[in-house]
Image (tube, rainbow, N blue to C red; front, side, top):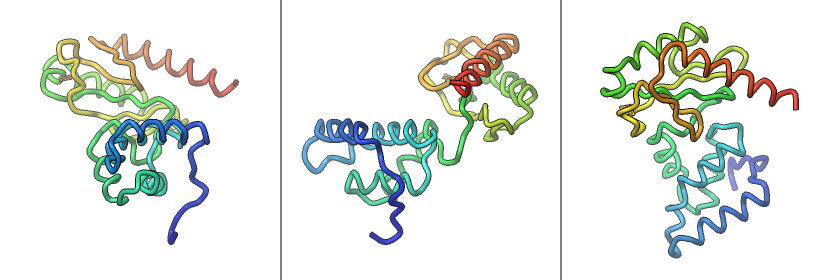
Length: 174
Ligand code: FES
């Protein structure tokens, strides 16, 4: 196939899992598996979705690449460019804003010396701002992977950053 990057391939066990996911949907509805397949793609391909990876997902699901691009760009949880080991997704929607999301974002920018959308030079942290994550009563809040960190203060953010740095620096040594 023209323009296909054949270096990109899921591990066999991931492909088997994807088959099982696809088979949960009626025949011809394999596109419904797209969110879960993109999630697996991020896990397997450095936590972001390159065009080559999205094209690969399109081939697996027998859909057009544009259909994958549309979904991947719609949801803020997917990364469309390389990111750090730890992606901080800070909610900036109204209820969180009222209780200090902007203050938390500025504090993170200052502490990490990056702006929204950027990654620290050591590749450790990426800062993203996102819309409501459904924890509006517990703001300001942020998400790292599947974990929520709520009622944030400058001090709790400092603790969180140093805890994350410790965990992910240790991972390098293993
Ligand atoms: S407004 Fe921030 S979680 Fe809903």
